[in-house]
Image (cartoon, rainbow, N blue to C red; front, side, top):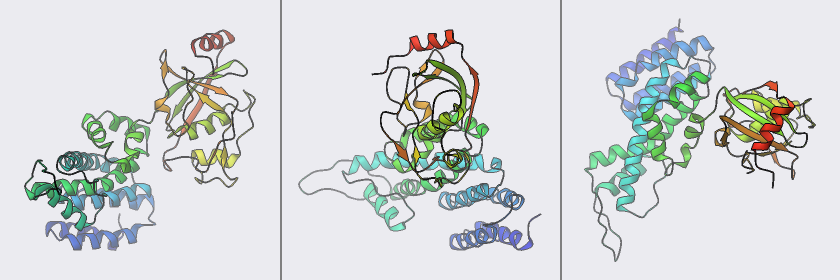
Length: 356
């Protein structure tokens, strides 16, 4: 059961939504956040359930602000399930409008796309570019002109996509099941792909949708010729993968054990390890012999005979980084399923390209 004052503030949100009182809604939402910022998971859960009943009553802009609040409740321990469908719907709508906005913008001007954000002056200015007369000295510009209301609608979508994205990236970090569900939704995949070139600020979305879970991995240790069948999940990038491989294979291959705080930073501890920068323990290459970019992601590693293959070698130079994992709430998994036989190890080694 909710605290009486918190329950009243939720009621106030519903009244503001019914009255279409945007300033009152935002002020109440801020007050509610201040009252629940340090709430326990049960309270966060109850608040989120009440908040999710509001999405159908709100404009896209207010819905985006509500989604941010919902994401904060999830961070406080609330079950993300009630938030998933409203956030996906709002995000897809904002991304689709953003893609149309970018196409219309490129059709009428060579100016850089406006910086996304909630600034009303920027939104109105962008809408006027798409709807009003526009030209450049000495040039005749022909382009699609949109009714102002439609242009404003697209500009708003462009400006609020980041808020919807914040909520989506929060729920995507919470579980394997959520990532599996959302990665299979064709509308979401198409909407994210449509803005990838024009919205680098939303880079987390495609990367999180591509996170591998319960993924088999064949790991070859080139100096010893040994090979291992492993399984990974929830790993955001290859910096994190490198640290976790060194930890998981300690005692199986010659490697200097990563400092415990490096491993904690790659799993669920403070993002910046107390022992200082994380030092790479292996060079990582794929089955083609190409270097695996540490800034890349496991999903980029090529597949050979149904398995992604990682070839470990001694570091060619000292490479370091400061952050253990890109996504603070996503818990990675890595397991050594079995040590491959010498025959299997030779078979896999014969299939990979020699190291340059």
